[in-house]
Amino acid sequence: MPTLTPLRPGFGSSEQPPDFAHPPLIEVWLGLELALPSDFTLIEAAQWRDRLGPEWLGTWQSIGAAERHSPGTTLVERQLRNVMGDRAIRFHAEGFSFGWLGYDGCLYPRYETIRDGFVATLDAVRDVAPTFGPPIRWTVSYVNRIPQGTVWNTDADWTFFKLWQPGPLQKLKLATDGFAGRWKYPLNAGRGELTIELSHEPATALLHDTVGRDTVQRDTESLWLRITTVGTIESDETSLFDGMDYGRETIVRAFSELVTTDARQFWGAAPRK
Image 1 (cartoon, rainbow, N blue to C red):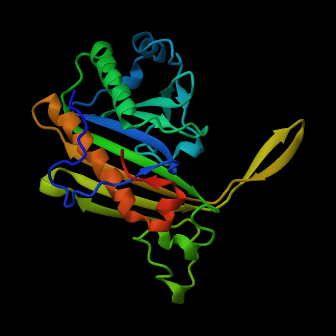
Image 2 (image 1 turned 45 degrees about the horizontal axis):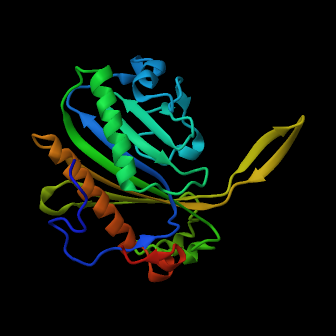
C-alpha cells in the first residue's frame, strides 16, 4: 500500500497546508469507476454484510435530503450503511463509492482511515462480484457545510471564499438564495481534473408531527463547498492509490488556498505535524 508523502510531484509550492482542529467537513468519498457496467444493487444487502462484517447493516438505506450534496446522489437512491451510521457505500452502474458521514457531529477520522475502508470495500467487491470490469477512474470528494453564523452572516461575508465575486448582478437585483457555482481546473501533468462547487441553501421550514401536532422548525442557512478530484487509472493498482493520494492532497491544498486567513483561523488552522 503506498504511503502518503507531504509533497507529490506537480505541486507548485513546497509549503505545507495547515491542519484544522474543527474543519467544516461533513462528508468524504473515495470512488471507483469500472470499465464494464455492473449493477451491484442486484446483489442483496445481506450478502454485502456477510462479506463486510457485522458492523454493517443488512438492509439498504435510503439517502435523505441532508445527504444530497455528495457526488452521484441524483442517480443513486440507496446506500449500505454501518451500524454507527458514519460510514456508507453507494453502488451504481459504473462502480461504487465508500464514504464517511459526519452529520452526527463525529470528528473526521483522517484520510488514511477512509482509504482503509475503501480498500476493504474493494476487496469485498472482488469477492462478491469477481467478474467486474477493470478500474479506469478514481474520484476523491470532500463536502463542507458552512452554516450561517460561523464565518459568515450575510452574503456580503461570502468573500471568505476567494472565488466569490460579491454582487456581480446588482443591477438585475437578483437574490443570492439558491446560488450555485462551479469551477473546473485541469490537474498538473494531465493527471485529471479539480472541480470546486459552492452553493447556498436557504433556511427551509420542516414540518414534524409531534404528539398529534405539527411543529415548524427552521434549519440553518448554509453554504456547501464541495471539492472533487478525478483522475484516470493506468495499468496497475499502485496508479489507483497514488492517484487518490494525489487527489486528496490537491483537495487539502485547494481548500487552504480558497479561504481567507480569518476563515482558516476560525476553523483552528495549525501547522502540519
